[in-house]
Length: 159
Image (cartoon, rainbow, N blue to C red; front, side, top):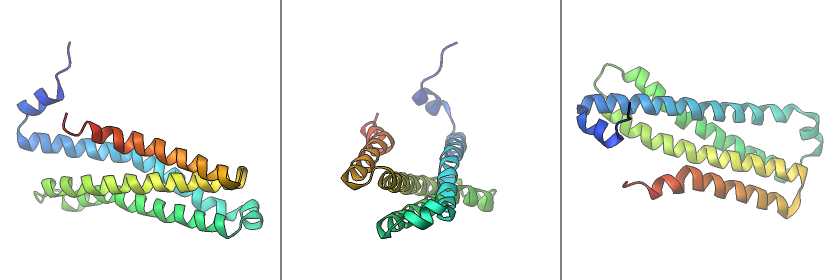
């Protein structure tokens, strides 16, 4: 059995079927992203209660930690919003509007998540190796995540 190309499937779909499929796919994708952000957010919240954090962190580490927490909170809010909208507006014929807004908030949420991951790695790197190497490690993380999550998909935007 051969798989049909996505363009062929989309061509045979009724616009409402395509919208339903796209919304369901987006909600599935959000489940993956939400798991990652929830784990990161839990980690960021819990480290403040450790002895090492209380005794060995300075202003830079605490500021970096807060930046990571703020971006994680942004990611949580942006990545969970589409599920809330879907649940609240289900049955009101608003799927097209939900899909349009959900796509935007998902991308914004992924940007926040990438920044939270990078800031978290900067915090960890500062605690483990310190100095300029911590910034190099976080910079490499930012580039890798940016390329994998944003640059590569955007290169194929019109394919």
